[in-house]
Length: 257
Image 1 (cartoon, rainbow, N blue to C red):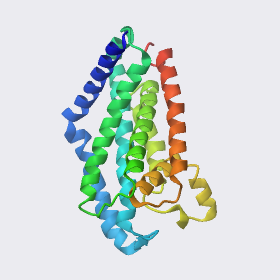
Image 2 (image 1 turned 135 degrees about the vertical axis):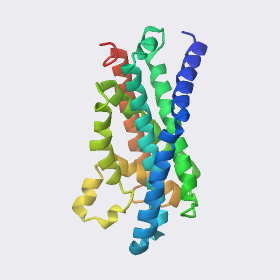
Image 3 (image 1 turned 90 degrees about the vertical axis):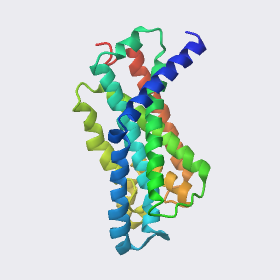
Image 4 (image 1 turned 180 degrees about the vertical axis):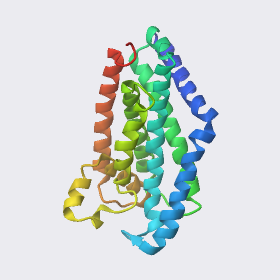
């Protein structure tokens, strides 16, 4: 295939992915916005008024970056895993596989669709957060970069889950038993400086902690972890998951059986 044909194929997959979640926006975009709004009300207004300041910031201001990133993470992941598994289940992934289409174009198309949904929901949650907090972004470049890279990372993770999944139950195992616990324990609602020394060390093994703190640094200008560590870890995971996803696609695991 020529470069022009590959780009057209990528555009087609991306357009299909975006159209898929935009067509049912009341199921894909509205629910996470409502859920996050409840977090703002319950944790920010009700519980936050009892907690007071966190690391020198009002509690509402402190949790806003984490809640925005949580929306990006969950929606980037869920968009790709559900879309790719549906393509397998409905047997139209074979149309891509029999075409002279490189695996990396398929990967880029699905991942880009997940990124778009993650960022759209993240933007919607950000707009809602303005009703509860005066959002003053300290570093726009870092904020946008962390949001984009995190969306790419979890879109890749969703693709790998979709490749391995053999049933609709399989696409909910990782979000339920791995992604959700790591997200809630990733420093969204608290600073790890509040934890005993042992649990601080344990928390540092949670990769989502670095993403949340990197995003928090971009918005607030301070965090528990340096943004260089956040960028380094995210890039390392993106490289590793890209390699695994591309290897699985080239091997035809879960798609040619």
